[in-house]
Length: 222
Image 1 (cartoon, rainbow, N blue to C red):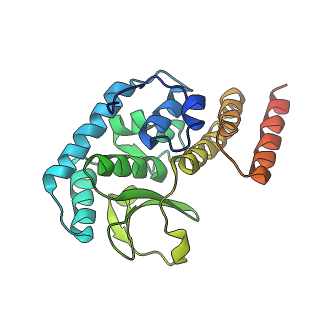
Image 2: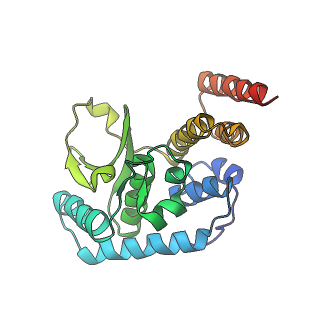
Image 3: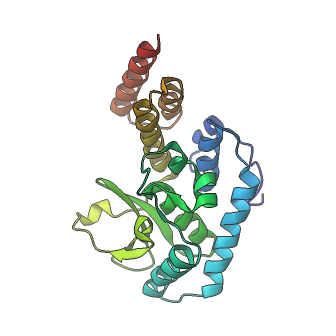
């Protein structure tokens, strides 16, 4: 099965898989709200991965620097500070086109380009921020795609510096969209994003809380 197989999978189908690919899950998430050219987005990730692979970094430090140079400088990926919570900043295809986005989406670009380049990158959810970890050494190196790919050393407990699963990442993306659409008064799309969270594997207390939030949003619409 090639990288571009099943680009039309829907979010619920992918969310039910034990370990879905993050790029496909993120694109299916975006396609739940608007029309998405998933094949073009995957091709752009392939191109970015080839650019990283061509840089041929050997050590984790060189890998982190390669990410900053190729993705942050040459391709211009950085955070959208003007309209931080705009819904487009949570859509992988639009982030790939506009080179701006939320930390979690920019980190997804880095992680997926890195996967294609054979680099051990993964998104890392920290309190109040989402970054990329290079897990080729111990301790892992942390990169901040929102700041253009600079190396950072935040004061966080070591146990928090772990690769996040695609499911965890998608949940945080959807949380952002619930907030973004709610603050814009678009309750219909906020309800859609809230309902999509329930398709993900969740601990029971979290499921109960998110179900209650979904119902509360529906009640506001009615």
